[in-house]
Image 1: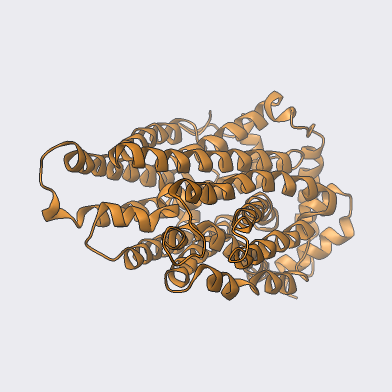
Image 2 (image 1 turned 120 degrees about the vertical axis):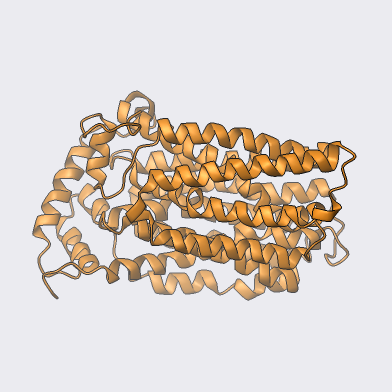
Length: 462
């Protein structure tokens, strides 16, 4: 081993962990290609629009419960073992989808179990990455979660567009097993080991992650940071009674709220149906694949700039662009649905604007909010805070998705698009005045900033 820190072991660990994230992306993206099949004669049972909407959103309900499942085990058995547990609900989910061709109700069970896996993934893996990564590459490593997530969404959209629902599930059934085999030998988080006074194992984990023979200096600093953070109370009540915890919760939940307010989660779930209704320029299968490919490419691009440009500039650029895009699309749908203006000559417009919307979302909001979630919390309360933030995220996803489906069916596309535009504008203001910059800071430095002890800069302190 060399005396200089190496980055590749950290990338190796994170890439291995993101196999579970890829499978979660398959679950998240499953409705887009599957809903048209559920509503057609291709599926052996008759499914109504209302049933299809509940099959879609029950995954978010599972996500809510999965957040608490992850929290229960995080501090009891450790980050590594909890991450390995994600494979179980993912495997059950795929098996239930396969067997739903015999018993239709198993489709609800499969979607719910997939949601549990999603909730555990968001709760545990981002926390794990935040604890094993060096500050200089923490943002880059966290973006790998978004990259593999969107890769899963894109892949299931391609495969699911051309295979049956059952054959698509069979195609991916080996992934949870592969994940367990590869991640089994990865190290535990040094933070967790120090929280449990296992300094010897923490040193071994750091040596593996940094590829250094001497990690005494970093270990000593981590031990001081963890001891200081663990000296604080760590109950759910303390999320709201301790000022720094309350600030961190407010920032991350607010960021999640306005991230979803762009409508992207709703659009992705109903992507093929949305494109079918909004435009006839391109086949929905092809259009949805292009949209998701743009999402993936821009997420990859954000990997190279998030630790250079910073979190806040990317969030402001992304949210402002999404607001303008949604406002323009709202005007188009007003003309199309509320006036006698013939917009058929620009039938391609919604498709192009959807491409641009995904571009703008993915370069900032789609990645940075997840990075913030991995950075903002003290060790004493981290598991509970991430659990609660993700539970809020799951409920918000459910609400936004159902809101989109109801308003689009009852009032046309203008109502959801205009609503999302207004909320996204409020989100721009929230980011400008409330969200702090965390680029290049250690987890302890971020905590000190939240406590008001760091250097105060304009528009970065609540």
